[in-house]
Image (tube, rainbow, N blue to C red; front, side):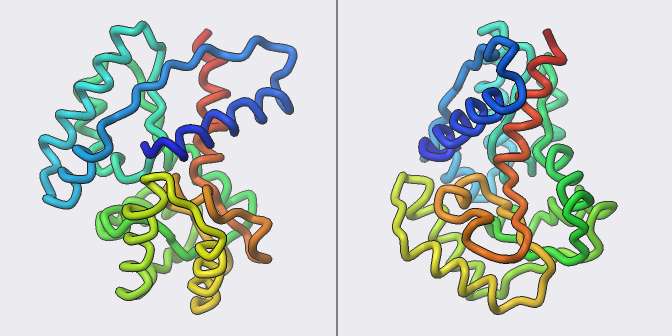
Length: 219
């Protein structure tokens, strides 16, 4: 939902089209940029009903723009995914369904979850990928507070520093895990597979790939 991660989503779509679908026309994409300040206010106040109502309003506008489906390129909104689906008249892609197969492909048994505290507390990954990975490891309180600060105060508002990469690497080094999941779509802005030797699951990349595939399926 952040502007920088939206731009990265577009970059992923272009790259994947060039490598896998260059013989086909690039699908038309309509972006609806949410009011990120309002979204954060609802999240931090725990007001999930107005949060869902607001996102539903955004989806209705995409429906009126004659979109065939909606791809919510963020993880935390999936806390209210079922509510959004109930009101939507077009399909909503689920970021977890588009990520689970990566764990199987990379043969990861235990994964460290790097995400917002809302995603972690809601148990979204545990519920949605339980068939694909044996254990989801959550950061301790101090490390989770660091992640929340990094995501909400820096990445979501477009601030990126080289030091963030080193801080994330040090955090990962504290935990005994087979892989890492970037469970927030802002994290790929500063960290990727090239920054560590253990497998990294980039939820935004997985979702972008699924979005592109689905766009051709719905032609």
